Length: 166
Image 1: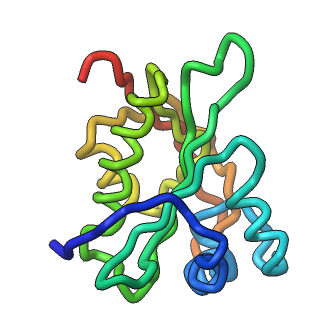
Image 2: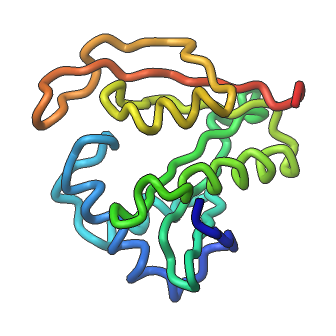
Image 3: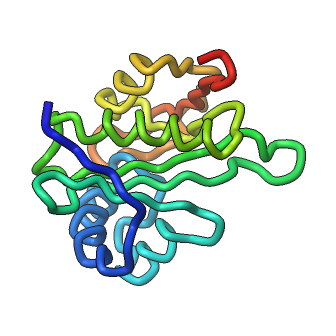
């Protein structure tokens, strides 16, 4: 496993973040984001209001990013949501696992009682496996909710992990 350092996102990370997000969003396989989203809109989405954004560094270079945000407001604000993106060149080297571990610790420190992923594309088996190994359960399945560019219509999963029991 690669040594991964995680720190808060800095404005100087914009170019590196776009380098990571662009191929992920353009592929259209893992996020319900328009594949032709412009750079400024993609960065505004990722770093949007109320989101805390982090950069994962490998050998001093940004190799991934994640954000954490309340999943809902009001009575649902005790559950957080996250988004994760890893540099495709660093895939399979533990960057996503390190970001998830950091996100779970961050969620607990912010007082969240659970983490929920609202729309995990079922064909994204690497992510589903990582989340399940970390204790997330599939609590919902949205049949054919995502149109994958190669596989056609695939299910989207709702995944959930209580944090107060850890």
